[in-house]
Length: 197
Ligand code: NAP
Image (cartoon, rainbow, N blue to C red; front, side, top):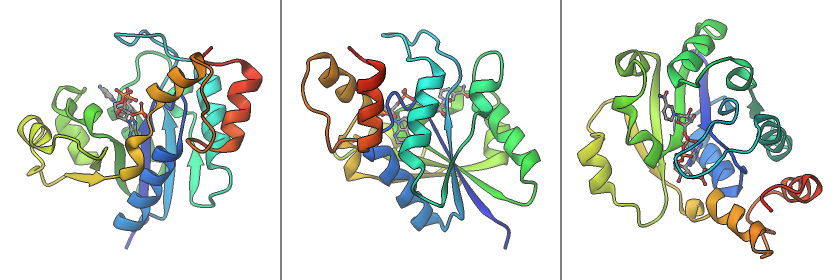
């Protein structure tokens, strides 16, 4: 059997314990040999806010994953010019690891839109997709929008995803504690760089 590679896609603004547990759970459930964290490309305007510069998000991801021998971090989306499309990332990873089976992991809300991502047919040819949900997530909504019946999509419930990057950013802004929501090193980095104030 070839290697099974997890590809953990996200903005990671900032990375937190919910993300780390998602990756670990995916690795156990799907027998992944390695999980590559791929922070999304250069800052762009999301509908509601500006994303933190990629270099900060990349470094926080490196700090958070450093102690896990199965986790690595890729600069592939950060260093690629133009808008970030998952299909380009999976194509490149397929070339780098021709014998590996790819498992793309991300949040269910993002994956709801997968049929509207660039080249959905090719996406499904390149990888399996694992959609991580928070407790209480309306799965019926997910099934209606992006059928879990699709053989290449699996939904995984992760209780620790009650932690969210949005909540962490708001806590920092309001001077409330973030300890234990994310790795101590990431907390120190946020304080040192004055992020999210
Ligand atoms: P997002 O909209 O910022 O996040 C949607 C939800 O998913 C949030 O609740 C988020 O929680 C959660 N989430 C995000 N990444 C996660 C992860 N790896 N594990 C568990 N939960 C996660 O999503 P995004 O970061 O922009 O996009 C997610 C991934 O999908 C990225 O790799 C992105 O490139 C890809 N994507 C591709 C296309 C395309 O190819 N056209 C379009 C959209 C998205 P937190 O805020 O706590 O993380």
